[in-house]
Image 1 (cartoon, rainbow, N blue to C red):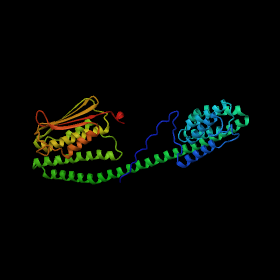
Image 2: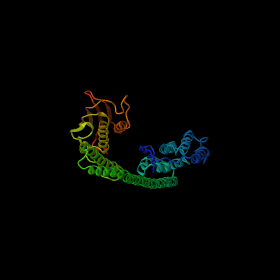
Image 3: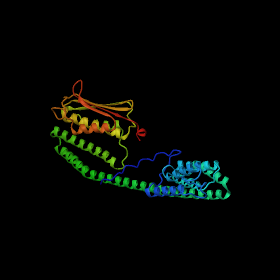
Length: 398
């Protein structure tokens, strides 16, 4: 079963002092309403014609203030902080010029709603407190009634924006919980499927290998003291089958919840011990370990082990060698494996060297970890495989 994996959403950019941490609703209908309100308020005269907040009537300061007010209301969803500060400055300019205030203060209240909605509370207070105080001071200089009306208007605007933000934050928390729950369900489904595959592989392949080993052992015992060469071959079949079962258990451990595989040096020693001297050509294997190769990350251990296993398999199949040497060492942050033999330097398939499936898989496994894998004739004869893999410790790899 393939469990679909969705890529995680991009992390939101950190909000600066002037940048919202969430967007306002900018659908065209809401923007159109803002523009209509701004246009109506900034073009219709209110009060006496010489003191109105109209673009087309009144003193120049009031006309300029009306333009700023129009821009503040129309653009409050795109730049809330700039709209709030611009509207407050326009109100202060009209008050300092000595002209009566009419509806200019409404622009800062509408912008205040967006600031409270798009910023965290502390940042919204920091951004909005100075301009709102400027507007209230200008209204207080006008008269007490204007101050009360302005304070109520800005208070209601703040409550509306803070309430919208509270609903958004609640929805975000619920959405995050749902995403975590869905991710946990996907991981659980994946783990269940991997466990099922492990059971199926163990039951099918494990049974076949066990039967093969059992029959080889029975045949070897049935020969008694006859045909030492056949008994030796049957013994090797048994040993290879048991090693294959051990490898199968390690691979299945990746699919299930088995503990970590043994150390790399121990794994290679067991691999070498599984090559008895009675192999074709009297092949013997030697292992040397130089440096601290303990505490390697599991992918590194597995890649190096599989590379050594594939190299030994090629030696047994193709090299006609008498001795194969496996060298494992640590070179700074890298682990280095060298497998050399004294056989023929012919490529595994004979003729022109075309990497086989095993060698290609070995190289792919190593290169996925950022390492290198080279195979070819050795300088003194025979065949050589060199593997170098970056080897951080378990903690650093995690």
